[in-house]
Length: 232
Ligand code: PRP
Ligand code: URA
Image 1 (tube, rainbow, N blue to C red):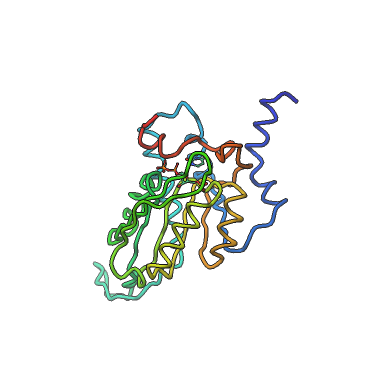
Image 2: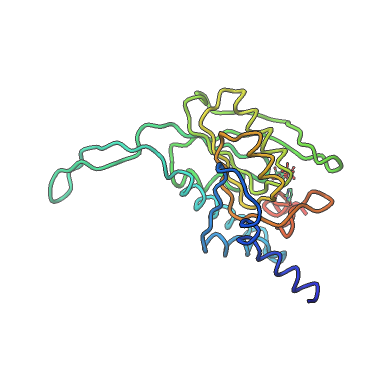
């Protein structure tokens, strides 16, 4: 088997790998052909910034659709052209989207498309290039964060350090109902996140093989922030 064939097999091995390793029940692997197709476009190094950004937003919307399956409903009375009926609408639950800067910003617009009343908070984190440890540099969350359903967005869950710290910060500020959306995750990051925050459902678009020596996800898509904002 030449190296390319081997790499290709590994990239395709998501299902099998998931079968071999067991993960906590709080992880939800989103196994949808549309997501797989769009993630493959993101992986391609030739995909340009504009298309990359658009597709990250589309993926966020699809993931948000799944993550919001349990939104509570209440019946309201509506007059149709035919008769009056009771029909369900989303009940008054407040929502917040909290992207982890920078790359998580690319996923923000997809969510208010689904829930226009959602407020947006921001958490600034960067990974030290040598130690790969996360550093917080900004945090601003919407008011009444304790009453909101919170979707935290970040396309990449690598070591899991940034995600773990961001959720810890949100909890410290009073956040209670938190879900995390990650487009591509490494097994190492999934394990760390679920150990530290077993109460926070983790939605993953695609589980990749491993981390490399620079703590980049393999095969991954490279640096998500740089690809979304065209900074490289
Ligand atoms: C990336 C990514 C995550 C983090 C994941 O951000 O968007 O926040 O790395 O890595 P981890 O799981 O090992 O913590 P980065 O620090 O590169 O900052 P950026 O979004 O500003 O590019
Ligand atoms: N951050 C990224 O943007 N990509 C990775 O593969 C790992 C961390």
